Length: 289
Image (cartoon, rainbow, N blue to C red; front, side):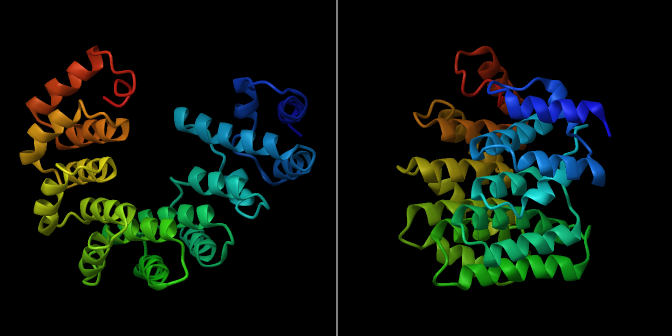
């Protein structure tokens, strides 16, 4: 047994402060026997500590691509705590295993927690997109899409889950999608309208260009932010002047979405604007730029 893993688990158990990097490197790429040791240690930690460890593993993996916590995240999909389950789903964002898609679909259909179901719907989005690129089997891609469509059709499903499902199906070229996006855009709920705008961006469908351009002028910060995202995904070069204005928007999410959109659209004007952001004093935007 790896003595570094044993030491790492002891540090997690006894240290209340932030953990050193050696702990996270010891937890990477665990084999079956190491996972058994991890699982035994897990039961000795309090809930707050477990949640902290999961979030820390997720953050560490974002910064160090060589880290692999797949075994931990897959195992944690069945944890009793919804926060742990959510982070586990998010931690598997790069895993395109088709068996995992079935797990996400099952979670979306059956998990008792709304936030977990929403996370599962979001996770299924990449399988819809991979299906469009023909990088996974048609059966798997179709299953992901149909699960999301069924979620949207459920009257009893929470709005937040339906919003994620709508954004996910935006990636599909299925002929039913345009009508569902339109229905959501016409909904009275502002958050659903925003999700419709993000779905428009995901669709790569120029049909939505006028809708997106109009909503960049919205009085709603939620819709301005979503429209900025969509403008970037649709690569609407005609929206660059408006996106430059949104870099000064009072809403930080809208400013970040404008930065993302300019980076996606590209070109000399966008590049110069991003360089100004990098040298500017907006601490919220500089890392994104």
